[in-house]
Amino acid sequence: MNIVLLGPPGAGKGTQAERIAKTYGVPHISTGDILREAVAAKTELGQKAQAYMGRGELVPDELVIGIVDERIQRPDCAKGFLLDGFPRTIQQAEALDEKLTRQDKRLDVVLNIVVDEEELIKRLTGRRICATCGAPYHVLFKQPQAPGVCDVDAGELCQRPDDTEEVVRNRLEVYKRQTAPLIEYYRDRDILVDIDGDRPVEQVFENIRSALEAKV
Ligand code: AP5
Image 1 (cartoon, rainbow, N blue to C red):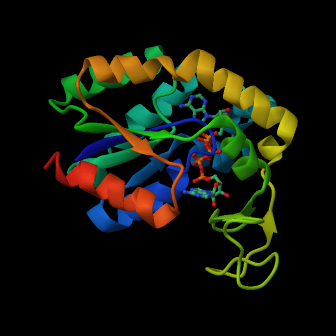
Image 2: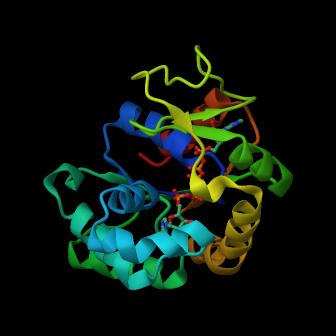
Image 3: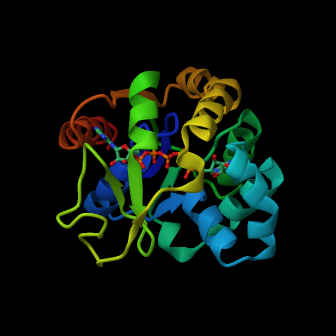
């Protein structure tokens, strides 16, 4: 199954993507993770992307479209994939449609995770991630067993540079301006399913599971 996870910053895309990938055996492709790895490795892509990400702006379409195009052609995507954080503009969505059509594929479902803005700000400013494996935590909603230490690999928990309140507010504005129009784009194609993301993590996942089962 070819799935897209859509939703504003902090909606829980990464949290749910982990569960979906494990349950359905599809590769989780997060453009945010790919870009952060490139920044950490100081590659040419990372150097180009860093300033945009730091301000909470989108990285230019041509850079991101190239990454995804290459990634979805790998053998592990032959039976399906889960895109998290892509597409984020109409131009990216059109490029994805075109590339899938050329490979005789299509998107099966777009899961639109809906959460209100004040909750998003709370989630993002309180988020901590493992510096080694990227697992997400939260200072109030998802605390690790030992303070400041990842449950999975004992890595140090830190704050993402774009999770400060000022940058979070800009990311939300960018989402409204550039990404929210995709909701109608996919609704018009009859593949969009709204998921209430303002519920406990496991309940959100159960609703996603029902939506996916209805599509197979
Ligand atoms: P990216 O990494 O994709 O960030 P994002 O979309 O802003 O999403 P987040 O990762 O912040 O949130 P999420 O929805 O995954 O939530 P999470 O599960 O972590 O992108 C970063 C940057 O890269 C962009 O700003 C841009 O510059 C660039 N970029 C990436 N893709 C691009 C593209 N296609 N085009 C151009 N530029 C691109 O959860 C958040 C917190 O909430 C966590 O602490 C979690 O524990 C908690 N939480 C999750 N679910 C719940 C729940 N149900 N209840 C309570 N707490 C919850």
